Image: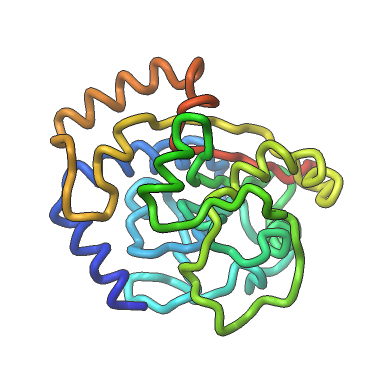
Length: 242
């Protein structure tokens, strides 16, 4: 797996348009974090530390730039130890997200937050994610299914529909299952900047200066069009105060 992360880091370092597009996502995550210790789950290539202070970067696989190796479904923290849990493109890779939320309910302090930026499945993005992206979109899945994690499972296995299902179809079930947690914000955003950047592929259909202009324009229309055409979904979950 380290070869995969090394490849991602190489693309990151030589592709300024990628850093610009993801920088926008980092800023959205950082602006919603509350003061205190933050745990990043799925730290990957470790670049979220550029935006979020007091951050412990973790992943299920080892990398020398990470602080911790841990499974999100069983977190090595005491009750109430964390102020935030942040994730970027991670929830849709977790085998049993319900186990993560059970752990988050335990390790977050009252008022703490889970902040997740994930693929958003909308009318405008669905065809792209189904046909032009390698990860599956299974809208009939249950995002709150529980079970015993498979320790031999490939950590890159995924279902891109999970975050959208959680924020929409299964929202009320989520609140019933986890009464100490509530989804306080869902923000649908990103239209052409994300797919046109090429992501972590070597190509891009736009320059870095063009990406800055496109991101600026997108922020002015995401409130009206994001739910129908957005490619990204930011979800904030808060632990209820005592």
